Length: 151
Image (cartoon, rainbow, N blue to C red; front, top):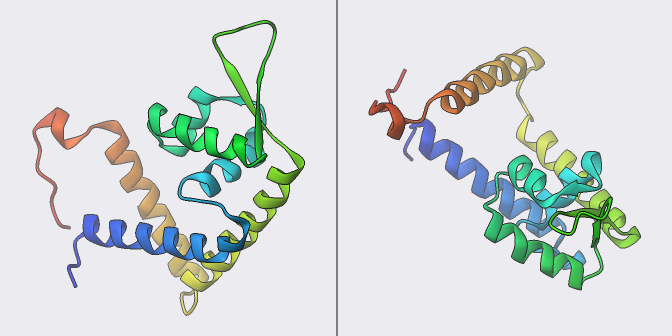
């Protein structure tokens, strides 16, 4: 197995997605929908632009995710203050039930991920992982021409 940061991050991301979809399979949720429900838990009524940024989803992809969620009755789009250009997304009662299922799945997956890892190790890892995120958010390799390095 490749031990580079990018490979392990990608592999872990895919494993988490797979586990989430397994756990919520019976609800009919599809890729992208759990993430949106999780975001709406604390941002109900957010604009599509806010959801896209908060979930790291391209606007075009989010539109199709939201269309499917609306068809399933998980969310509803509303205009606020007469602004016809910006829709705000609200969870329905069915969406809140699915969100609780997603939340339970995330808790279970994280508990499993941290198994056999001390709280000190977990805290150190998260501090470092936040620094990595900050470093990558500040400047992209394509912007600076820098190559990634293994430390």
